[in-house]
Image 1 (cartoon, rainbow, N blue to C red):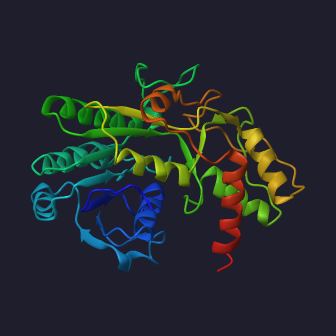
Image 2: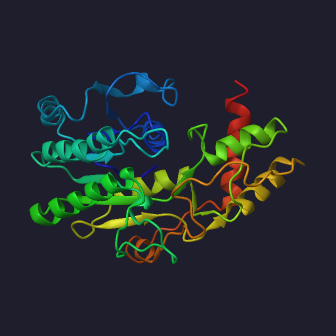
Length: 314
């Protein structure tokens, strides 16, 4: 059982990858949960549990309605994961700004009027941009996309409001989170699904790298932070502190599946934000929180492969 999390609990972005896994965990642990979603579209990750949570259908940018919801609910723990723009096809700059920045301002302004215990904002590792060394929270931010720009703005806004108003707001910058319910077009689910069919997906440069953190560890990190007392405006990296090249990731997945498929490298171009150094500096997270992930890349990939076999079989 988790260390007691103060309720009511509110989650935004519960239809997304991390948000849906967080919702599942809380429901499994017996917590009553509340989610704000803009509509009921694309609920495939939570269709089987959606009747086990309280749903508010509203746009986070409708401040009057959001203010009413927050004022009535008076959440003690808020997990803010709503986002748009992390995928290349999500390229509408105004929508990226509205969903990531404007919505965060609206939600936080509404929550600041109630006595909440923890507000956890979700940033992005892309806020750091291109670095040659492991990325530290204290690094100069050089965002590498519009999404990263507005994520950085949201993180800094949360930090400023936390310090200015002495509010318990924490921001998390996740690195490459993977596991069950990840978007099918992403590297790991695409790789696993193709290899299970004895096919090879298109692959970019084998030298591109990622700091890979398994979804169970990511969820446990969010939950552990909901019980932490840290400095106002704290920001933490969520990664492992290790990076793996795409070649290493593919080779390990081939080994775990037992596939003899030959990868065809550089069959698709690298994305504009791909890089050979993509690693979280986890010293602050370890020093202040004492947190380290429990799952190795091999363990996480094994669990993800087993999930794919069961989920897509059904």
